[in-house]
Image 1: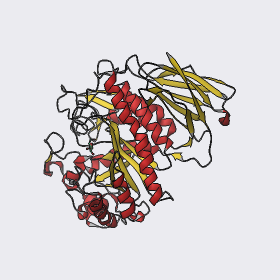
Image 2 (image 1 turned 90 degrees about the vertical axis):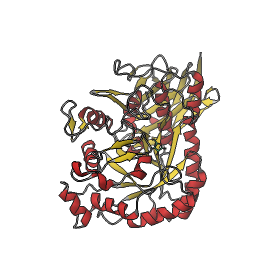
Image 3 (image 1 turned 30 degrees about the vertical axis):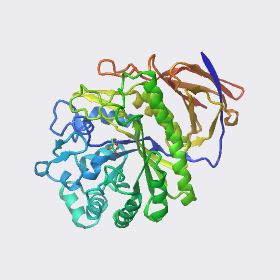
Length: 493
Ligand code: AHR
């Protein structure tokens, strides 16, 4: 069975740039994300590495042009004391990861490893600072350590530890989920605490000033955003965060691979809620900040399922299927379409956790289907949004089936990302692009026979993008049939 949906794409001089930072990532000390994932240790002779970080992961992330990386949490961040992770490794105290499995960590991956990695990747570091169990002084010291190039106790200590130049870290999170694992605070209390922390943070980096991100709401907690926007002077806050996971039942999240259509529907229902949450949080921000001085950062998002039971140390380790392609494709389209206020987003989490782009098993490494979405959507990095509208969308059990976003890059190439979430029905699409003056169209497609299909260590290429030749351009209209549960990126020139 097939349906037909019409899409209209136009050009608007006032449309925003789709910030490349929407395509950001997140690495937390959690399960096998850092240890046994990204970081295998400087002494490792079996897995090739740079300062202990796997070279195969570095190469894969470079191919994605990851624009930023958030670290060290998540909930872990509000237990993390950065000073325990610098200086001679043999002198570092251990830390018990109380939120994630109670494992004892040796603090061998610390500030230098993380910031040097970001340099290698040419990605902006985003440090998520400890407010829940830390102090204002501890945070200012971290800013001074990473950013000050003069003489100061922390800058001198950095030099002693082998790093002359400051890294000049721009992005700083002031606590994480302070309504929950970051301190169980009320919005009003946190707004006051935030003001206190934010006051002492700037002034260490010369021209590169710090960009302070307030710990934000979860899902539809509009009171949280409203309180921050109302109670915090905007000159103290460059962005407000939002967290939203596609999880339909926190007590029974369902399997990452062997899910049925009912679970698929519930997951997509949650994933598509992002559109409503972002829209409503932005409405509140518009009310208090009509000039748009404060940005919205969705600094945790993604699908969250039950962990794969057989994976050793696999806290929150999950596989990644075509369902994740549907989540990533639709949510990224939402962010693109709201690029005026959404300036950063961070997929949770990069390696071996939640909706990871990379999975590892000892020396093996694979790219997940979500990795390929991120790769295909790279074309939107810093391109100008082309507003799009969908006329009478088709429905899958009440959910809108088609999702679209479009942009034009500096070379005047147009890219249109289209997702059909229907598990079974192909869809005919007619796009009116007459305003764009296109002469040629080509594309690539990411799909597979079953929604549950995924890449495994035995079959790492099962889900990979293929050329898509089915789009035709005639008289200002692109027509194509997008197969069920597929994602297509078209390029028009
Ligand atoms: O990403 C996993 C966890 O989800 C993070 O640590 C926390 O911030 C959120 O609740």
